[in-house]
Length: 288
Image (cartoon, rainbow, N blue to C red):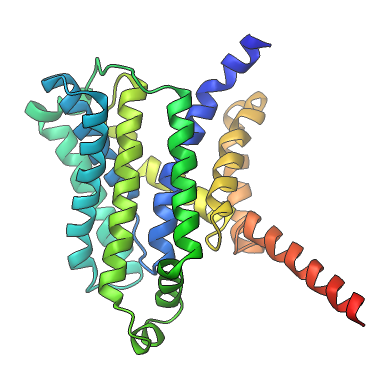
């Protein structure tokens, strides 16, 4: 039994790390910003923590805190030029930012050790720590969604003109969403550095971007449950389909296409809407 649990701990660790990144992507989309820079912010947090750990010997708490702050600061700076863009242009700009970060990580060899990455990072973050931070991040985003800030984000996303007429500062709130997104991504990037012993530029490139975005699209963008469910399903699916060898990624792609076409709100959000609709019909039936 212990061996069985131990065999799946790495998968659970991956889930905890990716939940944090999925929530980072979720919150910025909720504020009406089509940013895809989560992977870059995670890389910034990871490299900041790794450099402090290996080159200076900083305590893990200091390394992770600095990674979080660096992710947040870079996100806030990036939000300034992005405020002039909308929709697909924001997406293109943030994808370009990922490429810039990827290139810096590869070619700034004196600082990042280039394509080889950074090794010998003290592994001081375990499963329990990852779970606690994933739970705290989930609670934070849930609290934001239920509060005034979440309502302001939703209003901006649905109609910026209405938001402005209500006195909501669009630029201020979108910068705040970027700051939260960058801080979360930087935090979980730092946690990954202290958890995985080594990092390299490829970990924080376009593959991570597609993976994290898939969690949010598959699970749903209208509730915190969406990214959690999307991450769980898409992390477990390749393991369940392992006997199919290389064809398992084909199934992964087909599932995403089906969800995008037939459940555009995402699996979790579609299920939540169906449950609410049934309850409403039941109440109407009782009152009649």
